[in-house]
Amino acid sequence: MSQRPSFLTLTALAAALLAGCANPPTQQATPTAVAAAPARPKLVVFIVIDGLPMRQVLDNREQFSPDGFRRFLDRGATFMDAHYGHAHTVTAAGHSVMLTGAYPQRTGIISNEWVDPQTRKQVYNTQDTDYQYIGNKTELLSGTSPRMLRAETVGDVLRTADPASKVIGISGKDRGAILPAGHKGTAYMFMSGSGQFASSTYYMQKHPGWVEAFNAARPADALFGQTWAPLLPDKCADGSTQQQPVAGGPVYACGAYARSAADGQAFQSTESNTNGNRLPTVLGQKLSGPGPDFYKLILPSPYGDQLTLAFARAAVEGEGLGQDDHPDILSVSLSSHDYINHAFGPESKLSHDHMLQLDRHLQAFFQYLDQRIGRGNYMAMLTADHGFADTPEWAKSLGRDAKRFASKDLVAHANVGLSMRFGEGKWVTEVSAMGLLFDEKLIAARGLKPEQVYLAARDIMLMHPEVQTAFTPDQLRSSDEQTPFLAQMRKSWHPERAAPVQVIMKEGRLFSTRTTGSSHGTPYAYDHHVPILAWGPQWVGQGAVKSWVEVADIAPTLAGILQVGVPRQAQGKPLPLPR
Image (cartoon, rainbow, N blue to C red; front, top):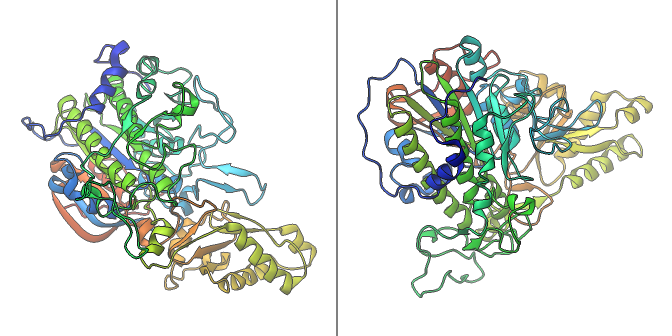
């Protein structure tokens, strides 16, 4: 991509931007005069909050700042019933849907990682050994290009029609940057080994000056020793910091966090890749200084959002985004909420407080864009890549049916049943994404047809007490729209990449070997009901939309606003905007 002039002194850029994010305004800025609306926005700001269920947006609405999430909720378009339509709701799959409008059955991004059914090698969703990170070590299976994505994005269509337009993807995770940026955009991701943001040689051979200046200022190092403290008062009436359990019931936080699970519970992680499970906490408190061990602690805190948005500001300045009549797209995927929910659960006080901290950072970013781009020149849209289940132990304390379940138990159950049916053998070799992979050589050696074994395996899975349903390739290729969960699973199943027999666990089951925190990946509402929020009155209007919509509808909607063609693989339809 060609570079547009920078408007800040580059040597001071990173420090200035980080300071701006660290001190967000507490009051809504006085609106500036809105110029006559352009035919299309000069800049589309696409924001992804990794791992954000819609219920967390609604639950915290009254505690949000005037101009963060509430810019959307009070003065934008709120889609109250927005969902993913596929079954395996994980980060890469979700990010592949947003701006292609296509489900994994077409994009090929069936999970974060999977086992190739032919080679039996581990595959990462954005791996490409032909390319390396610029100025940073490239580990095996690192995400370096969009080669695995078998669909075009809105940005790809835009840049095909107008090569002068720019598409920038930024995230704490490689997949969060690469997949929305598409094939013709440019992706930058956080490097936990160096504390830098970097691109790969798929996009360029050398970083532009504004990226080098940002990294040279070492803004990640400035976060060492920062304290993550509760944003709102959290004292109980008796002056203590948390209530005591009643008759063995759950332990809640107090004050502003009264509805959330208190800190320090046994099912909340204290692993070395977190900052502990109690607030306040000091980043790097057990370390002697910045370095790789410290940098990995930034994303599981509100400072991960702060740093990512600082880099996004640098991109706006360095690339001159939104400064001419060639519309640009800036995609920013904020990864911290996902790390926090995985470690502590979405019901936790830590997750609750992170929502409030994130909200303040969004407010500061939007008000920066108001001044830099102009309120009448850009629009913003916000969504999430998936939701989250409550931590099973917390759910059980509230009387719900929930438990953890390891994939190896599914393999063992399948092999016992298949051995009884066809003779001794390790018929199922492993789980890939949501499916069972088989020893195809063993099937052939026993003179069996694969379809015969797949059908038997499905029936055996249906006898497992923790399994809701299972599907064979014949079912997944069928046109059956009546069988529960089949349509969702079909959208997650790519015949060349997915395992042949797909399995869905019962609701409330966490498919994980971890003993703390929570996860996602199921076709249940807690995992697929996510926010779709939009702001930009002249393009999206204002009001709440209560009809069912899907994240796949975002791509055709933005294509219409940008007046370009809909991506070829798109399955969604334009959102019913409240104009």
